Length: 324
Image 1 (cartoon, rainbow, N blue to C red):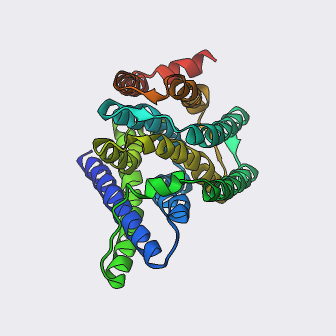
Image 2: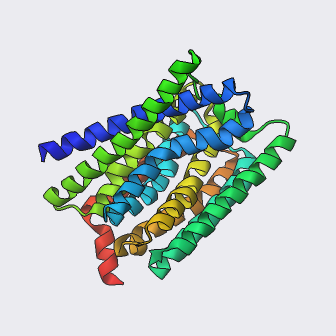
């Protein structure tokens, strides 16, 4: 048990540090190459911050731990809305960017509906993976065209929250390589430790994925969002959360389904994916109604996240599954 805990903690630390160095180094390299902030935000930052979830889910699925892989994505999306956005609002009220809400929010809901459809069908296969990746490519291209014409670009604003590494080119490349190796190693350690914990503690892989692993892979987004809120830049939090959820569903589930088709665990299909859908859907009118997310609303979201975590360890999802 102690070895599994050490592997899990070590994996989480490596993931967090590796993702930080990778994103900061990649942004520094992209700026040296003269790439625009808009393109950096849509590609380098977006892909870099989603890499921990991608590698953890891919490693878990390839190893047969599909509950861990799917739970990681579903749990991360729930944590992004309830915990990360809630924490940001509790520190500084989050403004509602209408473009982010209409464009990115609508795209997130489409991706969520696609995942729920797959859950109803029981699996994610290569066809689902191809559709997801094509939709993501189309979304990124549409964002590029829309933001290029706008007076300000949402993706470019997000880049301002990243402190790039501006040392020598050799140091930047070393940071990128070291960050990538850190994320790869962290994913390996985290999956091994989490599956070991699930076996020895009697808790299902789905629960571990939905809680511990999902929280761990969301730490980079949480740290970035909280730091932005402390600087009173919490208006970028909404776009970060919507974009992260979209990438989780289209990039991660699409990539994993393309490489190794898998069945969606019955417990997640019966309970957790509906929680994710309800949370994603409720976010839209919540943000649009008052034009911003207040501190009290943020605290309420964090409290709801704690309730969700409690339902996992109390076995509520399993009870719902047996009733259906």
